[in-house]
Image (cartoon, rainbow, N blue to C red; front, side, top):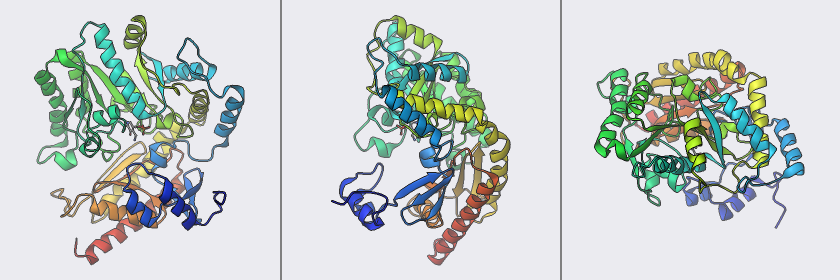
Length: 461
Ligand code: PMP
């Protein structure tokens, strides 16, 4: 076999990919026929593919490349750490400097008394940690029956058995099942489900489903509630302003634990270090991953409050952990990423420059005949595609068909935007400049226009 490098022809790379590589969340046979796009390089907000296209990455990879691609400092740190201590575990009464330094830094950055970090290799693993951690906590508190975790329909918390079960996506449950002790309530998705209600009344109603669920299950059986401050993979669903304050009131009233899944919303995405700060949420545990290392190394974790860490720590062994919990190279890379975010004031850039500049242009998309609503918090945005803005109608036929067509136009125009059903979503690297936002918006308009023209030509609009 030829050595497989960037220099092989695209078709050859695609054929090898099709023959041997199973892709996540992908219909393998259909992709094999079409051929996957082969990405070869990244710099800032730009990707290059094997055909030499310069693509603007409106999704920061999978919502993770917060500092942008191609920061060589992270490679230098990784190489240095690999030479010094490539691996050691943190299981048997040992530790190492990168894990110590990263945990201390996260304790400094995280709000309130979130001062303790349990490391994992990904967001899914961290949420699996959370399931075991909250159940262990209540067991130590002599309430072992308090083990149900309440989550939301159309929430996303990963795709391990635990993470996939916490998530409220039935198409994930359909492939492999769901663990016990997880219950789902409705999501605060006003555009799709709010009917005639105002967003505020609807947000309140959806939050109050938590109270009803706690009472139905019995508070003595409920361990925790988990939610993403803004649902990401569910379609960038920004909850009405009434939602999180009511959720907070309810978890406080019943004394159940609150887990904020900050895998997407953490590390500057919403214009603060954490989405919990943007929405005034006071969680007992935050799930982190993605922007923690800007995707340069696989690492995630749970930032845990004093009370849970103390209780679990004083009760003997917590029988849980991963070979790569606190991996030294990943931890060193994450630390360097946090240094860049902080020293280069990237979160200030999101808040003061990139968000206001993009918001004006993103919101103007509602002038497009197909765009019903536009939402943007920090640099996390969505638009709803609809055939009728006034009634917020869905397109006839299978949901997501129009979103997919629009996504294909974006891809053809060298813009990466994702679709969730018939919502288009963006989450570009946080370092995006106004000039790059202009390019992104120009390509977005062009793609929407082409999609619209295509739908009209096919008699679908
Ligand atoms: N939680 C949330 C909110 C996520 O968006 C994701 C990933 N998209 C996960 C958890 C799972 O993270 P990972 O893919 O790193 O396992």
